[in-house]
Length: 305
Image (cartoon, rainbow, N blue to C red):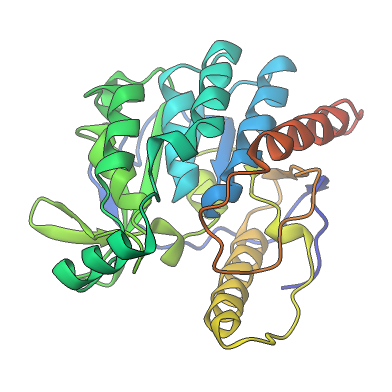
């Protein structure tokens, strides 16, 4: 995709063209009251802490969503703020993120990871800790009971398709959207199995526009701000390949939006680490939250927003 710096206000120039694989929910296409402002939260694993700082700045500014769309870790953050779109919830999310290492979401020794892989053959971590984290924060809440309309996406294995969840219980849908292949097990819902939403819609801005949003705030983890470099290590090859696909898809979706859709790509305020396999490091979580908050607050203070 062409370079589009974060912290920019973008006004795309074409008609919306987007697939629709909907888990038929309470908001049909023909609804009469369409949302105007959407928060779109993308994937990125532990770097998703930056989205918490962005959310804090948005709510402090009095900008609240009519719609929240999330993928992967963005589904996790999005579900929490959809349940309670307040700065009080953001403070609880900060506590959650800064305490991740104690919760063991990607915990365990190398021996335990090898043991898990040997037992199951497909992943190195159980999703029990992540399930507990989601359920502790959200309980058994259903999509229809959230304070803000919310959808999240996961990749269906059997249909090789994006599936949008908008009805039923929220926790299993979020768990499915966060199921990183190889790290966590696929999540079974209604007889189908799902992997991470980032495989099919990493930063799903077109979905927000399709559902009626005319002002979209893009909350991302910082990767979109940095140029890609050729891989220099074997394990970087797949990571760079995925990042190419991810950025290309974002650019395509951005270009597909109609002229009346206003897109604000929020700044993360810090450089995302180089692509690596260090997916468990939480040492800079608080710094990333604070940097994203400050950079986004400055961006939102500009007259264009």
